[in-house]
Length: 365
Image (cartoon, rainbow, N blue to C red; front, side):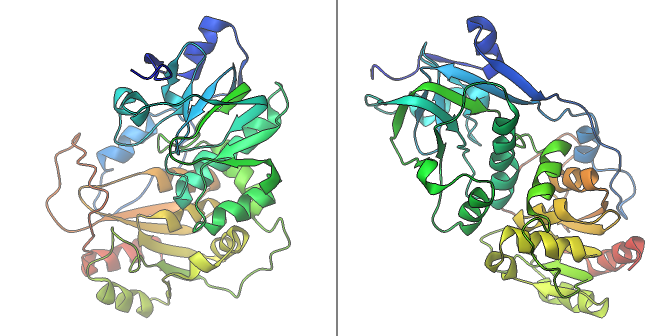
């Protein structure tokens, strides 16, 4: 057995901190903050939205782990007593004991004599998770009252220009970044670990406020040519496409919608923020482009398509924080019973055109 392989795990960083009396600071307390309910032509709320009303977004906290270790591309956090901290090491479709660190040979760590801040996350190459799970942690680090930071550790992808764009905007320069890679193993004098923020799907209001303050016209981005009504296509995505999109686009054009395919990929985050802030109506299937709903103006109207086997309320939550009037439409096909979540997030969506037109009318288009 590898001498550096963990022997178990703590569920949360706060659990470990209570046992060791180390610095664990709540920067933003957890609190319920749902005020606007979603609307749909289907009548009553889908059970996933109903459940979300009762959920508590996680608190924003920072934990200092003297002698803490960070392993692997996704940044698994290990305490000095050789246990993984699960809520700082989340990997989707894993439980703690199926994390790769429990099954791989773990080499000796590289020791860093300094304070190392952890900005890793398992899905940081996805726009939503980068914006809501990684960047708000920079805000947590700026507000906590512990040791200063010498370097940041990030898992980055050269194809994701939004990562470099936003880090630079927040003052995290390349000279202060250590990039992870498979098998990397670091041990810091102090590992400074801000909590993951939106991984539960319920990103808190403070995270949205932070992102709006930093990216919405804050860098002098000019207001775009007015696009009052936009449709976000996923035709170039790998999955979760609209199967009958040609017909959907035809209907939306009759209502004055402009169609965006890969235009967002060529924009800076500030440009995307400005575009969404200028829009009155936004329609699209569930996908990362809808992350920009957090930049909408109050009372903008958003219609999101879901497949029957994957209803995720996270964009309703973001819209709720900024005052968006949110609507949803579930695609065609058999629906699982209430309480059953197949989580088939790759499934494509077929939109009933009659239901779409009624949804547009419900929105006031």
